[in-house]
Amino acid sequence: MKQLVLYLGLGYLMLCLGLFLLQRKMQYFPTPPLPIKGAQAVSFDHQGITLRGWQANPDQESALLYFGGNGEQIEQNLDQFRQWFPHHSIYLIPYRGYGNSDGSPTEQGIVADALYLFDELSQAHPRITVVGRSLGSGVAVQVAAHRPVDRVVLVTPFDSALAVARDLYWMFPLSVLMKDPYRSDLLAPRIDAPSYVVIAGDDEVIPLKRTQALVDALGPNLQWSRKIEGAGHNTLSLYPEYGHALKQAVNGDD
Image (cartoon, rainbow, N blue to C red):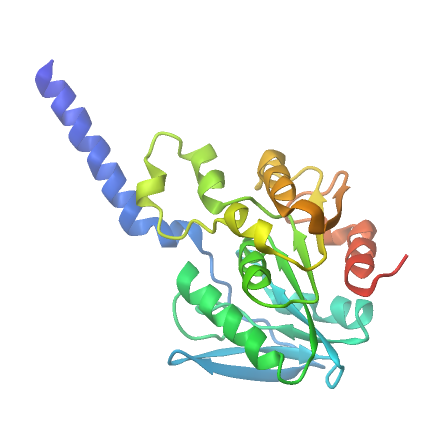
């Protein structure tokens, strides 16, 4: 019996070690770039790597900086964003390790890049709205908590990646093992900008309780949260209500 307990304990420790070593391969899903027409290629050098993305609607005074979801090819948003936000210069810059950007994704690196991008864009744009979807919501919250953003729009967000992972891997000590927890719940109360949340009513990736916990953490700067019934995590953008909600949040449209 003691031998069985020892084997089980060793097996559990091996699983913890494997999870610790492989976690970023399980957490990040970099996507290759798509060929894009009608957009200006832009690049930014930071910490020895080059981030390569796209700009649309150039020379506008206001800017929109978009942080995409995990596995999202963010360039697919260009045509819609160009039409929805004609008075904003649109910046879609894949994370390090995504698209044509150099490097490998980590929370520390992605957030450092995001803050750098904001600082660079603020030299040409006095007002910058940040929009973050899914994984990008965790990035957008950190930027909005540390920089004077004009507005912040969070799409299918979570309170923390740690909490989402705990719902799936409850049997492991993730608070000790997880390298990239994206604790939006701790940073959301620091945001001073008007905040908006768009929720997929049938989100199969981010449980509603995780989004609601972030909504609660945003406090008095939350202008509204809107649930789009029937929409899934990856099908949300197919619903007309999604475009209407984003336009209302970013442009102040009725």
